Length: 101
Image (cartoon, rainbow, N blue to C red; front, side, top):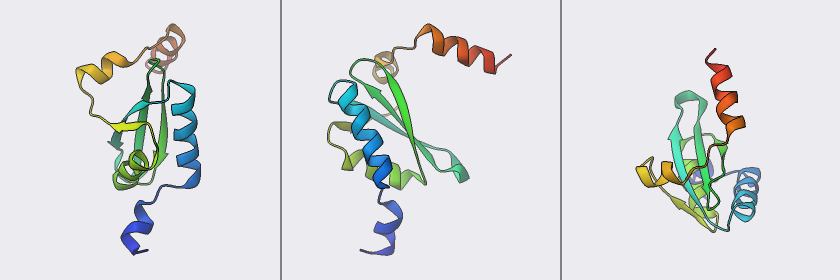
């Protein structure tokens, strides 16, 4: 394994979390890898049922490797179809609104 492969290999916990999400939300999910700068990257998962979650990874390359490593995940961008697939519930909307107060 090269140094590059070591830095992009997702942690077993990240793989397990993504696999569990896919299994719980329809056996497939969209994945959008977001660069968070020094904080790393967030892989936002959107299940077939519209539920969403995320997995934090050290960098974008690791996020992309996670998407490739998990059966049922497909890479997407924040396009209208992906955003439209999300079902944001009232509790989540209230929680997000409280953060802006």
